[in-house]
Length: 116
Image (cartoon, rainbow, N blue to C red; front, side, top):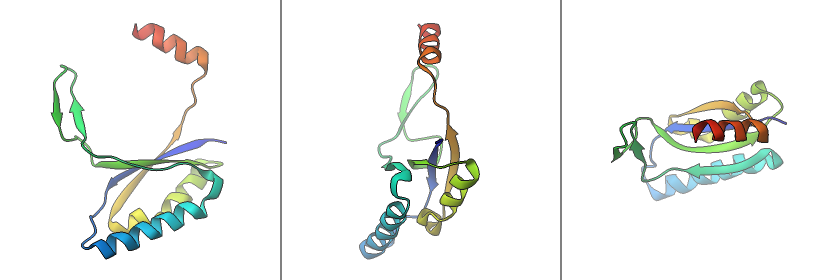
């Protein structure tokens, strides 16, 4: 079954610890409702740095990515329906949903050889 990455973009921070706890509980309930479809439930990002093509690195990001999840679904249509029910949208966040392509060992080896 195909796997989909949900990239979390933006979202508002809770205005109080209680609000944060309530949202986290909604998010946990949503993940639990997905059962075995959840491969990687939530990977929040912190301390992001950007590395440029010239090799320089600086703190910060050029995107609004704040985390990701990996979900198994039968189709992009099913993945989008799952995304539409995500509580992250309730805090003015946005989700980007993409199907992940599994590369065969042959393709991965060939890619690595071309990079070296």
